[in-house]
Image 1 (cartoon, rainbow, N blue to C red):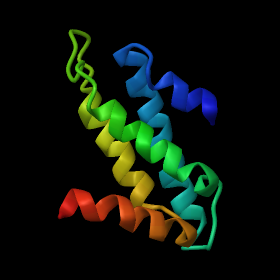
Image 2 (cartoon, helix red, strand yellow; image 1 turned 180 degrees about the horizontal axis):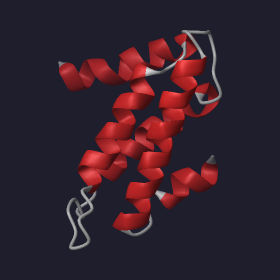
Image 3 (spheres, rainbow, N blue to C red; image 1 turned 45 degrees about the horizontal axis):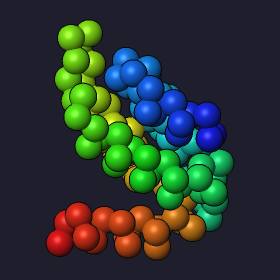
Length: 101
């Protein structure tokens, strides 16, 4: 998982593909786990969340090779939050309240 998070800092095209990987992984886990206390991403939830937020704020939002890094990051983040396990809810609420407030 650490390799994926580190790869978010790579070129925008690579970073966008890593975001898609997080997005698809979150969707797949969400379909197989109907709101269990934990899932495979629970131990990494905070690190992935923070990395996706940081990635969305990079200066390279849209590049010449048709990569919209901000959109990719927020799309992955949305799926990560939507399919979070119950144990991640407290952390999720603590992260979302400042954004929404």
